[in-house]
Structure formats: structure tokens, C-alpha cells
Picture (cartoon, rainbow, N blue to C red):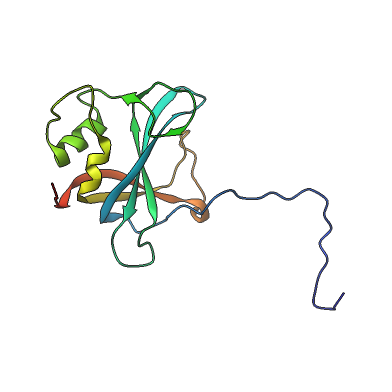
Length: 157
């Protein structure tokens, strides 16, 4: 063993981090593209959520990185799954943002969320600084989320 290499004993007291580090972008309005969504039950299986994933379409260090938007919903499966079934109310944040971009849906039982992917959207990113119990999150592990969709930059039909 060379003098520059330090041997670290394998004692099993280390851990690993799963996945990529979440995006931490400067708060503000960005061009976003809807990519896909997941349904999940968070907070001890109590809170149904739709997690919509958006790609940042602004040139820079965060270009094409994914940021989530979390929406309250009634989720039908207890397992986290991509493209799962869910329902929301007429006054929900998801319905309001969908209507802002797509207009009123033709049917109330088959609303294609993927239709939002046809547009280049304006979305306001915010930094998550506190957890669900209002405890501060250390600056090194804070991350960005889509706080709201504020409109569409470019529409395609």
C-alpha cells in the first residue's frame, strides 16, 4: 500500500444516498415542460399526492433537470406508481392550474394530465427550507419545487 492511500476499515457504519441530488435553483419563474406524474401516499400513508415532474427549459446549469410539484389528491393505490389513478376536486390547485393551461375539460371522468406536456409553461420555483413538521432543513440539502404554474409561454394544439 502506498503512503498516500489511507485504508478505511469496512466496519459497516457507513451509509449511501439513493438517487440524484435534487435541484436547487434560484427562486423565480422558469420555462418548464410537463414530463410525467406519479401518485403516492405520503406522511404515513395518510396524504394522497400527485407528484408532477417538470423539466427546466432554461439554458444554464439546471437545463433539463427535473423538479416536482406536489398536489393533494385522492389516490386509489397505496403504492407509489407512475401514471396511477387519482381524483381531485374542482377547487383543487391541480384543477386550477390545468384549467389555466388547457381550459375546461370536455369530460370530468377522463382528464388527460399529459396534455399539459404540449405546452411550454411558466412555473414559479420555490426553495423548500422547512420539513413537514416546520423544522428547518440544512442549507446543504434544501431543494426546489414548482410552487405554481402561472401560465403558458408557448401553446401547441
